[in-house]
Length: 219
Image (cartoon, rainbow, N blue to C red; front, side, top):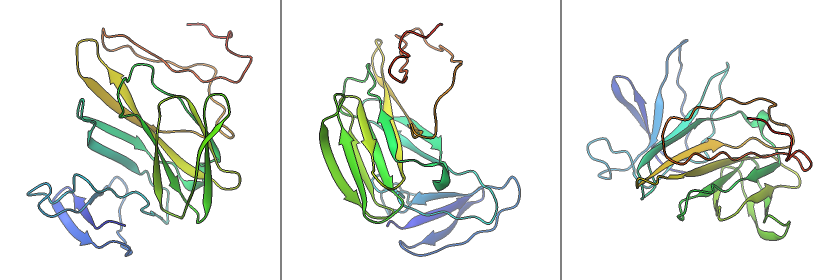
């Protein structure tokens, strides 16, 4: 629903108006980037600081990788939030969004994106009470504030969920991050996970497990 710029290594290639189709041919190893267009908003690049490309549909004749990113996220500590998107065949109808225990501000959100018209979304709190529900059409995005763990689901159709969260450092400031959430119906997790501690600040890990498995962990 927003105009966009198509950018290649040599610079801006083209301007594309909203709600129009555009095609590009890439050879192996080649990339291109699309950004929301906004004249005068980020001179001289004309990349909007306020608009986004949510709902943009991408189709390809061969397998491709698609990444999404925003490098100006959060008022407490401007940071890059990025992840690789998954194809619609890998989506599901059931998601759990776990609140970060260390992000004590209002910047934690989940973003719901519908791939079909008339998609009904329900949001439940930690004890199973329905606290919100709404209907989205194809390509429409809705944000929900994550102030506790939340269960987000649709009775009959798949959809995307992107979780933007972060950490407050004891030394001051904050760092944001984000990821596509896996659906809990098809993606059942891993038995072993490796992680790296890169800073001396407090370190937290959110672990989701089916009921009954809480005491079956070793570090």
